Length: 573
Ligand code: PPS
Image (cartoon, protein in one colour):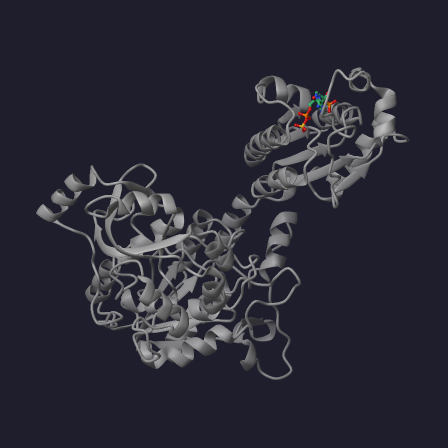
């Protein structure tokens, strides 16, 4: 039933019985490596055969061959494998293992569970620029896959890999299945020919229509919906929300046509090579057809707005390799809705003269954020409800107002006044993280070196992101003189709610003239050193959401400007 595994045999690296007991005993004295999230994803698919015929992380020859030829044997006509599967370690770890007699390394998850052991027989220092160029077609660190390559540790290791247990998951265990388990289900249900559909996004009607159409065009085929729940593109909708959507949408398929199973894959967003890799993985899961849509596993655009890959580049490579994979690649154009027919069509098959409609991911996010109506032709009501819950409109979301500016610029005064105005008008809970308050309760041991200031801002950012996540409002008023630390806060807070940076740009001369706390006088008297704006740097934000100079703006006016902004952006009513 289904496809023959890639390379002929479905790999299973889990030791059993005596061998397992013996490995566990030996592991006690082995040095340990704490696996990263990516490494855990890779090892899970190595152990359960998802990456068959691989039996371990790639040695130098295999790695070089994969980078150069997309094959395992060092020649152009070998077994196709387009993506390096490597285990990266630091020089320190490598030295520790090499100093042992057995050269064994215990591979553990963060709870300390033994996942596998590797006997190091090969190690090498990769040329990461070459790897990125050859596998991702780019050396731009803005590309998530390239960025991952550049951030791997300096040595790659290989050798006999012995599995002790699959990585532990506490969620959706009934939907997480190994290739062997999926194949068994196919056999039980008499599914001889199966089309796999890969996704890292929520599914809507277009995806449902596309997959059903694929089955119609290939009579006798069933469908495996296999979304990625390992690592996807940063900024994607979290997999908990997505799995809820998939569970809903699977119910809309004709009875017995489709099944849902989750894949713990760490995507590289490598476009063409990734499409071929995805097809191989699905082949190992027993599928003999694989859908490749528009911009498959594409990371989108670079900083200058240029696409990393052309929209149909992944399809072209997958189609070219299809015969050698023994998988039928089903290329699909983008599906669009034709209102006159109340039907979806591939964009190149729309009957002449008819209007089409589509809602892009960006537009959908905007509609969710603003509470705008999402039409029935686009998705299912239940899916909309799930998405709205996970991405509430801004007036129901938490947010952070992050002031930055010199001491005495007016940050604290405006922050206090804003706090009261918001309390008077709204019902969300508010936490005021003023510079002095934070330094009393959160950062009491810190001084004013760059290092300590950055740590202070990171702590504030972390607390504010947790407050925003819980739906509250955080008002922060530190000096926050360094751009990088402010950006860190922006980044972690934006994942959980709104972030509004306000530069209180009152000039240092005015701040010094006011000198409410008498600190500037102290500086001038030589009693205080490293004071921001006098003898310590302040990097003014380049693009804050608001910039207010309190020289000529009253506290009341400043608060009105901020409230107006919050209203216009939809954070408050
Ligand atoms: S930072 O850089 O963001 O961590 O600074 P912050 O925690 O906001 O500073 C809090 C208050 O510390 C007082 N203070 C100093 N400020 C700047 N430089 C030096 N060396 C310094 N020493 C003490 C100052 O009053 C800050 O409060 P604000 O509310 O800004 O006046």
